[in-house]
Length: 301
Image 1 (cartoon, rainbow, N blue to C red):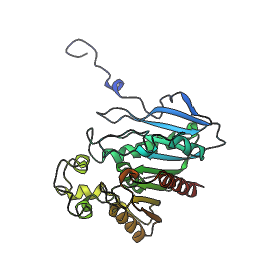
Image 2: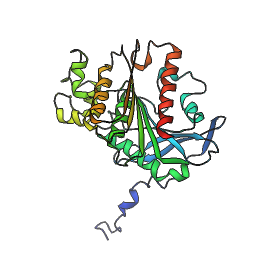
Image 3: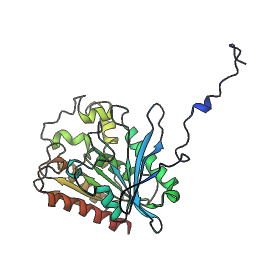
Image 4: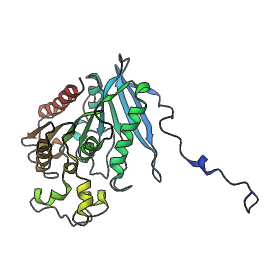
C-alpha cells in the first residue's frame, strides 16, 4: 500500500499498445482496383503524437507486391503524407492510385516535423515505418524484400538517409530523390553565398536544432553524402537546373559520392525546372513521374 492508503498504480498500463498488434484501418476503394488503408499507426514515439501511414495497394493482388515508401516534402516543417506536390494535386486518378495500377503498394508516411522534434527523429521515424511494414508484410500483402523509397524535396533528403542507413540488408532496392538536399554543410557554397549557414532560423537549422555552421558534426550526420558506401542501393536523382530553393549541385554531390563508392546511380538534371517542377510543361512532369516508376519497376522486378 502507498502512504495514501491506495495500492500502487501499475504504470505499465499507461504504455501505448504495440503498433504491430493494432487493428488495421478499414479498407476503402478510392479507384477501381485500388484499395486504401488510411491512417494505420506505425509508431508511437515517447512524448509525441502517434505516427500514421496510408497504405495503397492493388485489390485482389496475386501474392505479395513490391512497395514504394513515399516521403513528403515541406522543408521538414510542414506537409502532408498524401501530397506529392502541387503539380500532382489535379491528377485524376492521383499519383498513388497510378502507382498501384502499375503494380505497387504505396506507403505514404508521416514523420515528426521540425517543430515537433529535431534530427535524428525524422530518420528514426522512417526506420520505424520500414520495420512496421516488414513485420506486418504478410497481412498487408506486400513484399518485405522489395522496397523502394521515393521522396520529394525535404522528403527526398529523408528518403535518401533511410535508404543509406537501413539496417535490413537488401530490403531497400532503390531510392528516388526529387530535388532533395544531400549535403547540408555545402549549402552556402552551392547557393553562391546566398545561404547563411550560421542563421538559426533556416529550415535546415530548425531540423537540426542548431545552425549547420554551429554544429558541423551534426550537419554532416544529417547529410546523405556522409552515409554512402559500396553497399548503397541504386539511386535515381532528378533535379531542376533552375532550382533556387535547393540547388541542383546538391544532387550532383550525392551522385558523385555514390559513383565514387561504386554504388549505382542515375542523375537526371531537368533543364529549366524550378523546385517542385515549377516551370515544366505538364508532359515533362509526367515524364519525371513515369521515369521514376520505370526505375522502381526495374529495381523490384
